[in-house]
Image 1 (cartoon, rainbow, N blue to C red):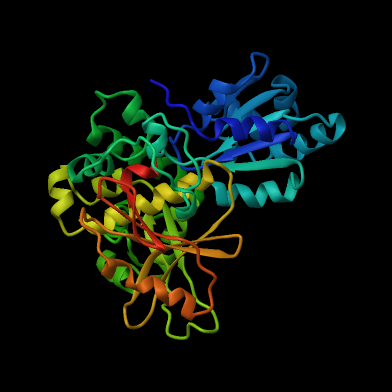
Image 2: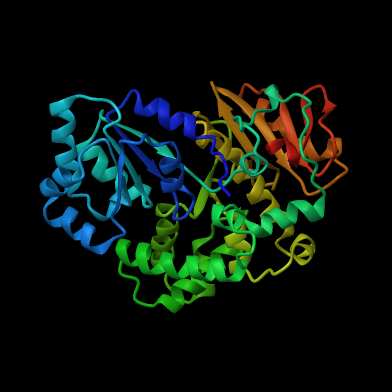
Length: 402
């Protein structure tokens, strides 16, 4: 089963305005699949996962591009950055739009190579796992409290949303319903370590790195504390910082930055760690059922990570710009998520409750005190209906994320 992706229309539009389109994102989120579904009949497809083809691309890029002429889709292009200067020469010679479609699973490493060779010639897009809207076959839009209106959305109670959180967002788990969750995530992790981690860096002890992954997963939705993580893993802080960078590089985690300015001297300046896929996070943490996860020690934090991930995805998949923060001061007054768009700040509280109250959003007033122009706020929770909590805050059911 194929799920329509919101980014499809953006890819087509980008291909009509740039000679090269690069689609980045974590491994197995469906990059090559979405491009294969929308590619024209005359666009050839070649994957650098094939060792013999990869060697040709690395050792003789000119011959490779004679063999696979544009329009072409080149999958896993990060394995052969040698291609980029030659793609530039072809693009500059022919000056046609949509000549090359590229995918890559290591966006940060790719950006350096791309910026060196293809600056001004490439439209760069990002894909994450299936959004809640895509799973429900709804058209996803960038989430903003100001634009929300009552619509027919699938209702979620605590059991249904935690089943979704536990399953995660990798398309293969939905395309193949019989696929065993444990088998999938064990295979994913093996592939991730063998292909991405070994390619990006020289991790000496894979057992320790796996321990680190589990330690990181247990801290989703929490402030990033390198010292505590290093102590639990049994490595240095320098190593933990390096490994967190690897997770960022491969798109498995998202660091939500704290908001502070000249008026927020008591604001925390440490980012929050969020896993981009809650299914992988729950599997690494050893949770086997939605029921135990929902009432367990990670229940609130992983719900927060899920909501943050869905909101961020709603912008990524629509190629829409916004900035995301959280706010926390030394008195532990906190706002879980702040969306900044066009210099307006929208506060979001994320709460695992079906009975939201005014007291849940009392921290929203802090934003105006520190000089921010605020829009309508929201409390995303397990309430059944979209409803005003007060004149400035909407109660938003988690179903309205898609």
